[in-house]
Length: 210
Image (tube, rainbow, N blue to C red; front, side, top):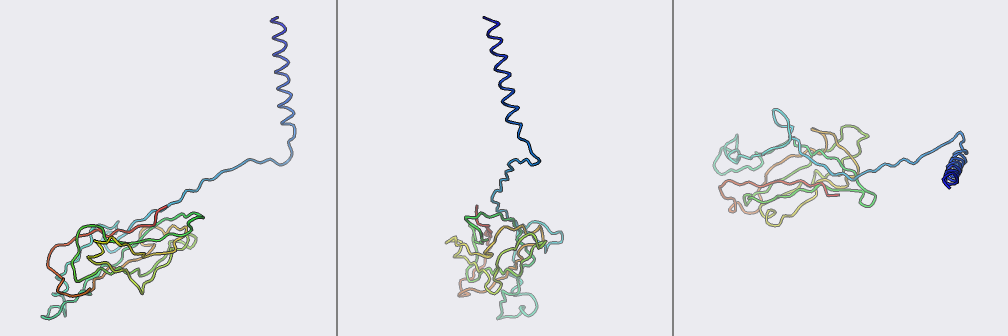
């Protein structure tokens, strides 16, 4: 009985070898295999401050409103010049990989929490846009003629406004690439709403989510 079983096993093994050999007996001068690539959507953003003595990611930006009344021609009774204050050389750096279903993204900006004086608003102007290398993609669309304006009421509403639109797949380059921003202040409404004090809020930029 054992001999019959061993013979059966041997015959089965030989049959399997013959089947494998026959299956692999169709080689030609061409062969192929499948290759898979998984591309994930990406949305990354940071703000680079090139105006610092040692440029770095942006920290606290502070406006000293004394400059509106004590600098140059402003040191005169009867004058108050918000335009005497500005902050320049901020850069939005970002990486975007979009999907076929949502082929573009936007960058929006808003105030978040804290406080901001009445009678004045922050003006954020996207001055220029670029990428480190032409093959990196295009940085999207900006409108320098229509800057973003945020005031105290925007803290209450939480309203976000688009500052860069039509962003496709792109990586801008780090540091002084992407979209260059300038911050200025301008009077908004009645000056009677402008009250002395210490104010602080967060300026939040968001590259629309994946």
